[in-house]
Image 1: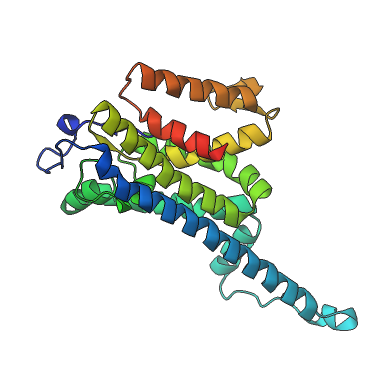
Image 2: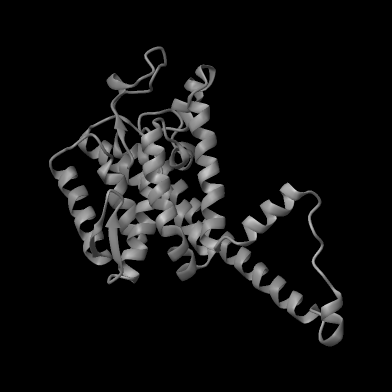
Length: 273
């Protein structure tokens, strides 16, 4: 979910929210940022993937063979706690190893929202707002921003559910590039919709990026059976699920529903497909 908060409804009564008329010409800078950020993300992912493959190849060449292999043991971590943590981490899937750092970053931002002294900074940099004086970096930072605990839990639950499958299909490097790029692209989609419809407001949340992951998995594996957390006995194909979700977001745009940022959802989903 990527909720919208109109300026008049913000929970921060003593914080000035940037507003005023915004035209399409004001979106050239965010568009350039979106293109550069996404290009850099995938270029960085390609380099990271190459270096990881190179390191694995070198390690394979240097791997001891024969009788020497049995004499070389992994160095144990000092301390029982470190050994347990190391064992836990090594037991995770690659998708889970990507998920937990992302979740931790979201938790840090959630805690920052609870610090009154930081709220002005949080509204300026961790909420996307096309009328703000700071347009570009909030498109990225708002992807890690959640004000309510339920919003954070819902998004992290969905991300955890789909991260392992997506990483297995994409690789961890390409997954991260897709996730981060989708966050910025969904924010730009939100900007564009708000400017065209003259509907100002703040948006925050990871749902635009998560929608890209969800759309990728559902289109690549359309026959996979999904279920709802509170209705585990009711299953449905992934291909049907993404069509219904995108249909609801399209209806939200047409009917001008304001609770969620439906334009951001659709932008992320379209990019993931």
